[in-house]
Image 1: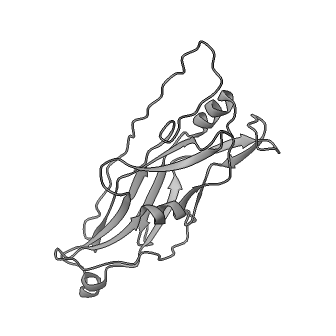
Image 2 (image 1 turned 180 degrees about the horizontal axis):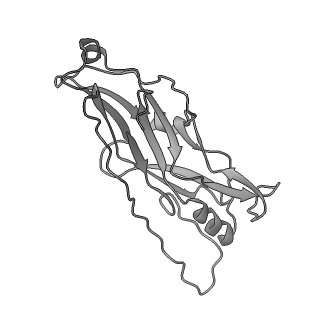
Length: 205
């Protein structure tokens, strides 16, 4: 089960400002496209991830340092909630305690920004991951979900707040985009989305 979080580079906090010419800056917007999840018939239950989190990268200060901005796409506080609903045919132990579960983060594609030894953009520089995750996808199952429940409907939930999410998803370093060409190159590097996934550690091909 996976949830994609849309990423943009744009203006939420201060907008990116550069010394201008008579050129009107182009505008940019993204639409997220995903494929619906699957349900495995006969499984002991189903996962669901819900979140109102929207991520953008904005100008933090006059030094043109990049800042990862966490926003809500509705009027509610930022959250990410995982729900596990046991199947009717699940063992009683699962109906009472849910299943060991891992929540981890990754990206839909490599998002790297090439920089030189001074941290400036260079097409021939070192490709550097833009994001760091507290629990990245590494192929090893590591239980880290603490379930609440069962609820009245038999389901279990695990919720994260804005503060918790900010500790899990960060920029990998301080990126300085002090000329528009660097802003353009950084935007080009943001070719995918951040993905939150949950797993019970069992993989079905």
